[in-house]
Length: 394
Image: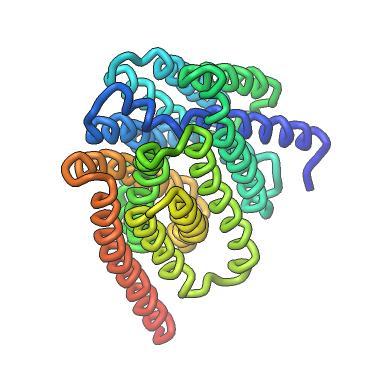
């Protein structure tokens, strides 16, 4: 049960999380088309967008480890927020692709704060309420993302592309000030060795769900936050419609997350993972063959529902059999690894789109995705069946 003191910290922390994610996503729906105004090459658009995932892949695990070693999360959270604000300002002034890439990389670095936000927030609750705590904070983040992406088009109409970046920087500063009012209690420092990380990485129960998550992020990020807005622009969509396409995707993710809480309370049915994975294949194919903007909305909806179903299952499976003392490290490792897909998705998809076009790129991605994702799902379930048989015999 939370105390009155903790209740105030919980409310403040949820407000900070809402503002932070709102700030990060308030310019996202039209970021690809903004970058496209600086270059004719879709490969360069993809490369700039990929800097976000690359930064996350590099910083998320080290920041989590440093936070555990320091015993405090707030100093690093403030540093990450600083990068988010500076990154937004750099992108607003970005006259070159290099500046845009640096700005996007800075916002990726800021995402290292998510592990710390989740970890600090969980300390306001009893140990048994950890999952409930993470669900609360994730809902605040999702709500911020939905509001942010919903505002993009209207802000662009009022002040052009730069306005959303300026507002993002201001919102992050407000969040930074608010978090100073939360008491940062020092926890006993923890040390994590490189050997521990390596031993976790080679465990199949972590490795296989993580590989599947990399593939899923590769396809989802390259579509929804990469080339879907550009395709919509070519089909005549204005900035408000582009915003709605991304907002619908996030709303679908949130709805699927809520659905999961009811369906997966006791045990994850075996069909949920392959069924959810197939839904994304269907969504990407709909985007590839969409004759009108209406079909883009249907494809975006399918992708969002798929991601909302698959992602929590993969997260849960990656830490389910891990000792409690190593779960934070395992989670940081999983999050850092799937960010590889957030990097490769926009980058490789941009190269394919430059060579073949956006629609053929979606078809290639969908074909490669369905083969690879089902191959690794098969390996994962086969490993579980063997392990269960061994346990039963013993």
